[in-house]
Image (cartoon, rainbow, N blue to C red):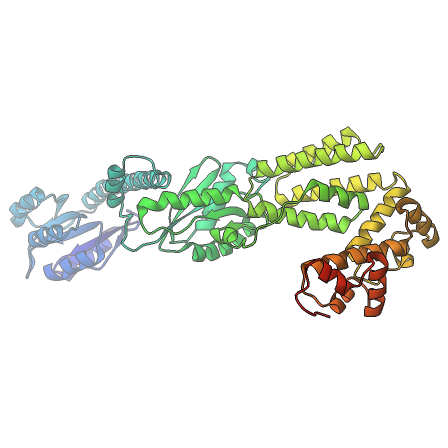
Length: 515
């Protein structure tokens, strides 16, 4: 609906024109009327109507003076002159000023409607053209942002275009966000991704641009630092989940202060997205995730995993998976690197165990199935779950490969829990064995009974603590599982030949009396 305004110093004329036709049916809504030239000019500049019907002769300012002044102040609407026969020369002058036409008083209804149809068609064509230019300008703007983000093109040309689109602002902040579907959702097509991004960015004034690059959508943020943008996008990502059932994976780059450095923010966001596999538990990735990795993580060796498998320590295997996740995160390993590492390690473990134990459960066919699952895992969680299940499966497979295996499990348990009050009866119950039978198996496999083996483990650890620490002897006694210092002295002298204090002095670790 377009707007029209009537300016005439005679109220009867204004009222008559208003009632002459059904204005809204003709496509126009009537705005505030003007009672003379000055009043009409003020109304034109305030309401900016699409069409003005104006009398030629009025007190104060004439119609021609109003037209001239309105145009000089930027008014671009259409004019129709209202005139009498005696004022025809004025009407001809108005036509030379770009006025649409003139209507002789009294106004003829059909003639007015004919003019309105012509003017409405021109307005519609003009608005359609304006929308076309606006859409093309937006496309050009997005293309410019794409070039800036990727650092493409001649720097001088970019600087000229950036100024043209008013992208530069002194002291402003820019950062880039990269959006993609979560693993397993990409198959639904790019349309789904763009719909999610539309919901994500709707009403977000900080996002000044968005455009696709391959299977991702790039967002350009301005006047907001990455931490605040993360908080905002986290809330909006919940809205995406409410609409679509799944969220977007988003990586936000670091802040930059100049548009010339925007591509640096994009590179950091892209780098973070490359780490999305190991940070699978996070929806939105920022540099804070990497900065939060304060301590270097130790690698999980195949020797350690092999020992855990052989002794059936499923809790240790589970702990190893947590350590493996930390190690991959600390070293920022890529998905392909992680999968290759696990595949290679599993093949080696499988081969080494296969040389020790003859079991149909250790088949190559079963191994190949596990390797396929590892390579097809969509996130770190499912990858580690598959790996853990494979290791636990190997442990179960070799668990029936002879009595010696259960003894290795018992011995490993003793090595890890020597500081506790260990009893053969309790351990046998934990391993679902008869204590007498387990004791016989233990002596047969180890060449020593359970108690002697436990004493040796404790004394060896006591020797290590005496050599490596400044702990007092009674503290070491408690730490290795002996509640009585006298009993500890007796056992130590039995297996080492000298007292703990003498041992410390002989090894050169003595720095004074510490008993």
